[in-house]
Image (cartoon, rainbow, N blue to C red; front, top):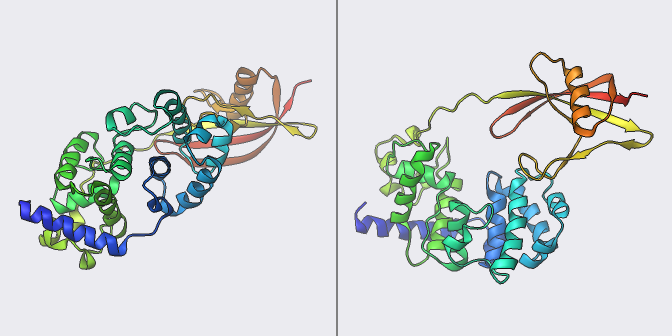
Length: 319
């Protein structure tokens, strides 16, 4: 874009955002802690889902100190149902690190902020620009889609090697006077107007500067690299009752669903039947000798990078 086109894009985008942006609770403040919490929650989660969790989280953990002093289990409990629990664990650890190493404050520079657990370029750039007005462009899925159509960008948006290029594009567009507002406007444009399948080009405030719109090819962008088939894992769990109690175990803090509670079980090995795997896993996990009482149900569930097929059994202790 020519310099005059860049200025026009910024002016028209900010004008549209000022008049049309959604009134969301985390936009009522520029304080770094609540902005940070919102950006962590909004990763891979829809806005309407996040709102009640955000409000409840800040009610119980209103500042860094409250979060840092909280027990991890209480943090995970508040996060329950929001998914991607490593976000909660990392945020909890990061709060503790802020209290111990940064005088109880959110670091006000990107380099230091990115030293905290769970803080990558997206969260780092968003918090630093919105809370501190620092010149860092945000690149998320919405922004990449806007950029891909704006410049008829042929690089796949879901290819990791493309990220640096989209980042450069975003930095070139960034409004140097109000970077935080501009970043929010770019994300909002992608969320409300420049949608994946049905972009509302007719009412887009920057359509005159969009190369894909001018070429009548918005439907061809963004480009995506074909995804690999999602692997499927076969697992079993056993439900063990003793009188009026049921056995649950806590997962290790590291890894998938870290720190959460579950019925004992695990993956089915090659050559095993589901009931054999259930007996073996319970022995290995909690050192109990059990036998299958009956089959309860079959469950399918999809995570981000894999699917599971789970057989659930009623299990009793061997006497």
